[in-house]
Image (cartoon, rainbow, N blue to C red):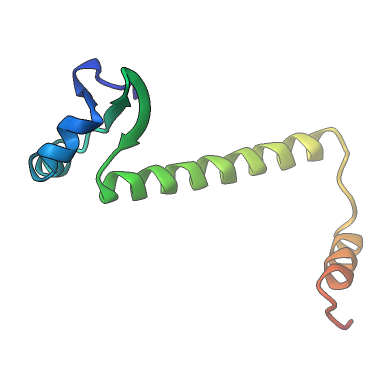
Length: 96
């Protein structure tokens, strides 16, 4: 999702009208870019949208890990299950 160029505002405007900006964030769920001296300084978004973003990132990282594992398996780069369990036991100090 690209940033809406209409949602770029000076930090000073945000400070003067914080309640209005927060209401807009809650209603639109669209991030706002705040500038300092004409340069982008921070991106502000509502908490619900931020949480959804974190969940999407976590899902994508999981999918990337699964894809990597499948690729390694297809290329016969894996290790036997017993060996994998043994490595996990050693790593986490789990008795046999």
